[in-house]
Every structure is written in C-alpha cells, then in structure tokens.
Image (cartoon, rainbow, N blue to C red; front, top):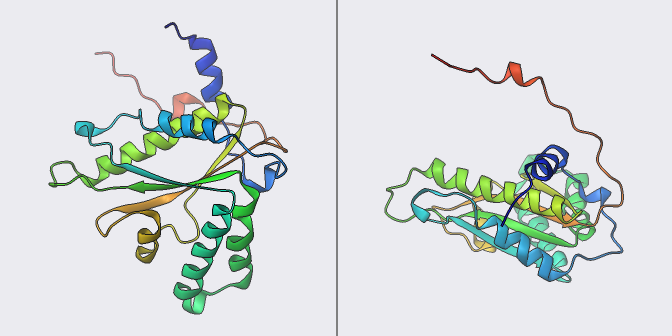
Length: 195
C-alpha cells in the first residue's frame, strides 16, 4: 500500500482540537467509525508490546452515565473548591458529544518498563485518535480536566490503583470549525548536529 506524504503532512498540520461546544449535537458518529478510531489508537508504538492503554467508550444514554459519574465524584471531592458552574459544566458538556472515550493507562506488570513509557505510549495512542478523527472530517478533544487525576475516579473507568486515568477524548461532528493553527518557527525548537 502506498501512502501520500503530502496528504499525511496536510492531515498533521491541519489537525485541530474541536471543543464540545463546537460539535453539531444533532448528528451522531457511527459506532463503526469510532471502533476504527480506537483500533487505530491501538497501533501506537509501545515499549515491549505492552499495549498499556485501556479505553471505555460512552455513547447514547452512556453519556448521561458519564456525566453522572463525574458530577458525583466532583461533588464528593471538591471540598472548599466546590463551584456550581463547574458542576453544571461536568453535567452538561458530555451531552454535546457523540462519543466520549476514557483514556486509561494500565500499568505494565513486573515493573520492567518505566511508568513514563507506558504513559507516553498512551499519549501516542491519543495522537492516533486525533489524526483519525481529522481524517474522517470529525472533531476531537482530549481533556484532562474535571475528575481526571482523582484516584477515586479510576475504578469507574476500569482502572486499578497502579493505573492512571489520563483524561477523556470527546468525538463529534463539527458545527463550528476551529481557527487556523499556528506554531513558532521550527528553528526555535530544533537544533541540527551534523558533525
């Protein structure tokens, strides 16, 4: 199979985060496309073929389940930092998506692989998701807000104590495109060594 470098370059350069408020809430993404997006994610590079990712997909009434889980955990955990506007966002924002995928890192048993390498593998998997939704003309958004880093949240997303919840990936049809991206000149971020 031949791949066109020009197409891939354009895909990477034009990939954007599309926030839930930019989604078309009247259209659902077919489950088969989401399955392919997740399959593409699992082809990310990973140390020792450990495949440390674990994804849980919420759609349909499952979006209400997701909203209820994160709202309850937030109310139980916020303490003095409780904010009613934040609670409302946690309850309503999930309902704007077609699908939400929890992003889990299941720790490789045995401790032979450094934890950071498992985390990096999952981040590569999420980049595959981003590129896949862009290729399908869909919107995607990786959020690490809300309950992401609360230990009590892990259980609800199929994770155990040594594992990590790394956020949630929202998918939907795009109603309002994101603005054109920008990056600093590559010369500021790259140094070539030729001798």
